[in-house]
Image (tube, rainbow, N blue to C red; front, side, top):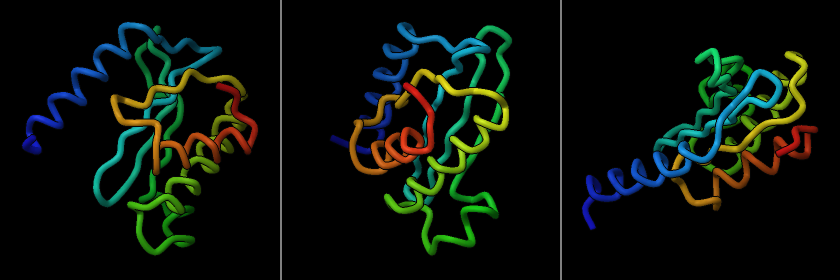
Length: 121
């Protein structure tokens, strides 16, 4: 399977997932995107179509603690950061959108770190 086919399959899975979940102001959608070198996460209110808060392995708060942004340790740091930023906004409950990626490795590390910091999903 070529890289292009894998990405197209992931996008099809993400579209299927997005038909089933929706973010609201009280319970936003936590969307994860991963590249080979970094990981990104956003809390999105789909009703108003805005991003409430975001975090990534490129944030200065995370970048000083990690050497490389494309591993599980970086994902866990990003998960802790997004949970802290969500609590500052008064958000405790989210809907997790894995964006077509398997719940495995970096995506799982990010989700579990966010749960440990107090986010419910």
